[in-house]
Image (cartoon, rainbow, N blue to C red; front, top):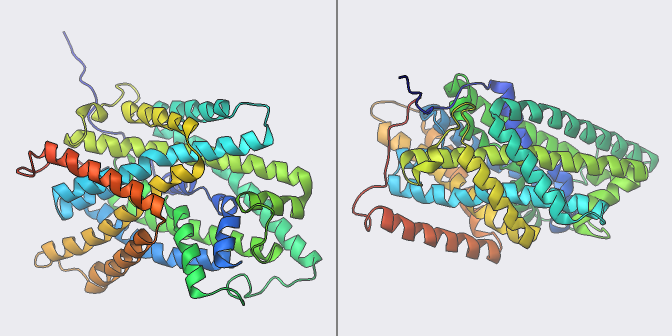
Length: 442
């Protein structure tokens, strides 16, 4: 009698374009318009400067993620890098903090998408939109990364189309107002300052959370030691360029930071530059962006749980792969179920969970690069500038962003981290032994 064992590794299907597209879908380029009014209000009408500063800051961390992905080409992202480069217990706590980001980001994405549709179709119950988002994205991710990646290509193409129309109509609006297309006002003008732009950059950094998500696809990527580092930098650079260009022309078309409602400023601008028809088209684009981003976010969350379950840090049930599709179905379904919590939350409360985990992970990935240099400096010489100085700058920037989060984010984040410390105490018998760990296979 022949028995078939369950699969123990993920299949490699993705090349550089697929990984980059997944990262960009996670970032959802249209999010710059969804949050335009809020960032404009913080910066006093200098949104492009906020995204430019955020891009420069994130590139330091993106470079560190690329280095660690080349050294450790396995799933797990920041959790894996810290536990292998610094300490297994600290790695667990970083992974625990990252769960806030990965676990709740899909929920926030689905919540925002449902809110857009509820505003346009108030007669349809909001819970119906939310459940539809959850069911469709969960189904696509369970079917496999190849199916999800193909869906993302189509959805990203539509996003790019909407962005193109928005830029063209913004240019048309500026020219009809007899304005010039080359101006420094969107970047800096009377009423803005370094402190206001820095505050806007802290908000804008949220839009860059996709570049690190591609590291969770390492074990499904062809030649990951080369592909993943390139994909990380390309995702950050392409996403940042789109953010800056889109913000620049939008700020030209609507100077300043005065809106009827900051949270729906993009709709106001879309109606101004293209009328009601384009506003409807723009709404469709925003919904598509949220759907694509939800696919990528849920896929990344499930793969983080897969890595932690495979180590035995989380219950080993999370390391289960669906035998035929070879997808981490338990994590995918659980993330979908967590999304149902959005039925009792609002967007602002939900997003409070996310940035704490993200900036914690960013800080410690930079620390991991320095730790790797210290540990291997005698056997593997590496440049101090790129392996010590640059990640140190990245860590300081990320730490600054972390401590400048609002009070709600810090309270929720620290409370979640305290629960992680208690769980780690139990797991390690009061820190007398390291957390469970297994050897990762390439």
